[in-house]
Image 1 (cartoon, rainbow, N blue to C red):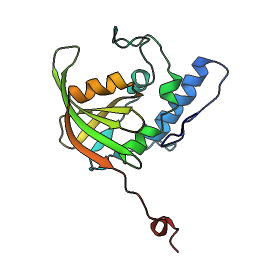
Image 2 (image 1 turned 90 degrees about the horizontal axis):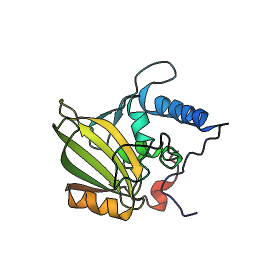
Image 3 (image 1 turned 180 degrees about the vertical axis):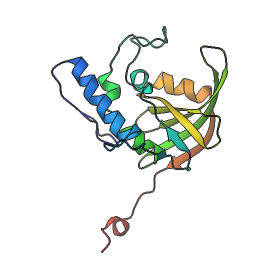
Image 4 (image 1 turned 135 degrees about the vertical axis):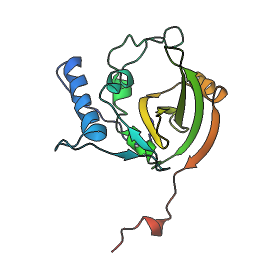
Length: 179
């Protein structure tokens, strides 16, 4: 097993339905609401507010058996995606690795133009997709997934590179606990 920038979350349950429910609980308490019911506010490293919706869970943690031929997700729950559920927050804060921030304009299913920000973690070929909201400085989480080399190549071809963000590397002295 290769080394990842962040650990994968491996939950266990009696069946796939229960497993999906457990990951959904993690999604809610990490990105949407605290246990006290307060809304969670998440910001990226640029100070943009990132909005998460419970409705995005099903799309973000499902997948297509063949994304090259069909866009619909026919696999209702993807363990491969769900195990990386906590990576999203790490990527938004640019805690590790090299992140390409890309801009893309695409048409949605209703043929409306949508501005998207794609965050690509180079070392992981992991992608987080955010959509621009009407209010400047605010984005909505759309999905996140591990991508193959062909998909990464396509994203780079069809988007504009806005920034390459490298997480700071601490020296041994900087990494020591402060007293």
